[in-house]
Length: 238
Image (cartoon, rainbow, N blue to C red; front, side, top):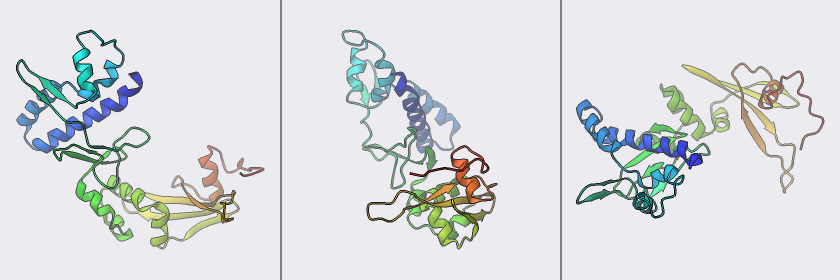
């Protein structure tokens, strides 16, 4: 139960915020009423973290535990219960954050949906635009957070190539590239060649994003290992 708690609570908070924004984006009084209704909900499957820590069989919690196995949020009243369906789609990244670049990260049967990239809320229109991105459109985006999303989706290596970036430095470890961004820190990356060949004998190229202060390729590669350039001298690479 404890292992589920943080990720589930973050999802519950995100659903509450999404419902508020969907039903009453600019009405403070309405938002207060909706917030109280949401706080009164039993959370169905999202009650699993704390129900898992208790012995519910034969106890007063047996009912909520059974609902938890098959339903979403619900409100029990004296003569009627309002029960929500579970989501039909849920996409999260390795950290448990809502994350999906090709549609809603969370979607319910009635059409209510939340879109997100690495946990950051975005609109459906923004996600649809990602498929048609160009370097010029990325540079025109004034919101630095949205521009970072665009860069991640487009691919830093592809952006460097399509932006006509020039190498700053080359040495035995790789090639250092840099592209300036208005109102944001520059994109600085090291292009490296995998020392282990692929089955067909070729060597795959990788791109490592490094701090903007990086001045040499060796310094950048060393930084990815938590080392300084002066001590990064591998005897063998595999």
